[in-house]
Length: 119
Ligand code: SF4
Figure 1 (cartoon, rainbow, N blue to C red):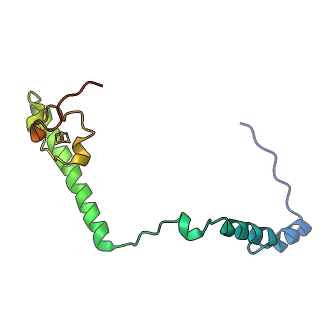
Figure 2: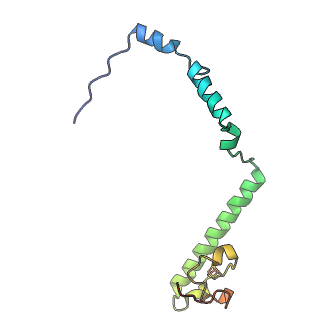
């Protein structure tokens, strides 16, 4: 096992000097803030504040739990009998789901909506 050499203890002069450094509002910091503000970089432009709404959080958690429950139920069903995979899954046909889905050309829930194409 290797060990790094111990740090030398700070002497009182170093500690006093470091404590004397301002943490905020220094000349360089103010100059950088001013330059950024003049260039159009404002703090309220680089942050997106999302209001916290307890009801919305609970609704999102319930939606997440429902989705996981549906997936796990369908996987268990498919595991018991995998001869007809599509019969075990309930479709949720929405453009945002189906457009990127590999099953869209043969999925019974979107029959004919996505004809096969050649790249
Ligand atoms: S194409 Fe069928 S399997 Fe794919 S996302 Fe749409 S409904 Fe679901």
